[in-house]
Length: 132
Image (cartoon, rainbow, N blue to C red; front, side):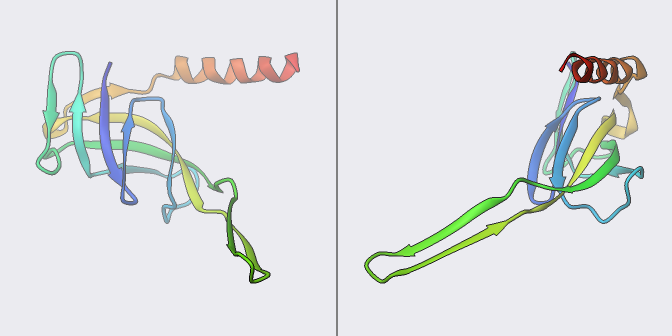
């Protein structure tokens, strides 16, 4: 199994080809293909490359599917015996990203998203909706 560890938005994500992940908001439009240059680790069945701090020449190609917002979190503050309480909510802006290709050291292609698996996922979603 081929995977990579990338860093974006101050967080680290373990990704494989065909994965869909939610990352901190990116300043791009939906449908744009871009690259994550900060790859901390790449691994396939034969080799593992660990960067210090990142692997030279490695990058992950991804497509921005859409901009969205996470679920609401509730911030509740109460001061006991003071008849004082505050309830606030917050929804973080996120980008939903699909991983297309993983490139290793010196730009060598390690893994690629195949259309067959993408089409298969779409078919299963359609049949799930019909069965409801």
